[in-house]
Image 1 (cartoon, rainbow, N blue to C red):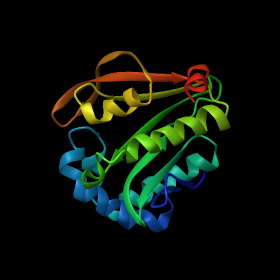
Image 2 (cartoon, helix red, strand yellow):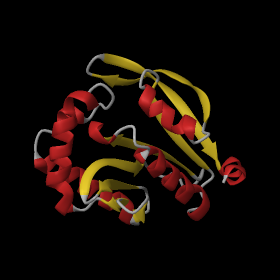
Image 3 (cartoon, rainbow, N blue to C red):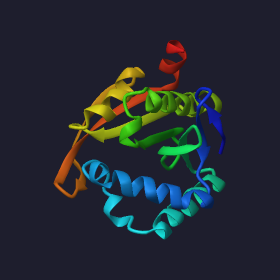
Length: 182
């Protein structure tokens, strides 16, 4: 786990138990918007659910299997970004993310994804980073596209959300491509 400054006012910090209330409140404020893209939102109904998520993320990090970081803007938690389970054998990882609506459109998530991609491919020695998102989620899809990820395909009915199944766009970046683009 690491703390990483994206600029003078924005940093990525590992989530710890003291962040549970702030994470729950952010999730609760964002619930209606997030529900259309993330299947877990409706199961987070109290602070303890956020605390349990953080404990699980800390265990995953301790086991070198991934991590979750908060995105902090001037000391306010504004979203999260995570390495999903790291596949050390195949040297690959997926990135997941979400951001409070009032902070969208400022390049924060693109910067955070760039930092995690660089960390995975250049510091951790992984070979592949993948981002999956609903094909209809244009804001989320724009992030890997801006970063030069390759659209590798569409997985049909990949995830069940409250409104039904959604297709996923799968974007990938491999280490050799990232090195050329740096």
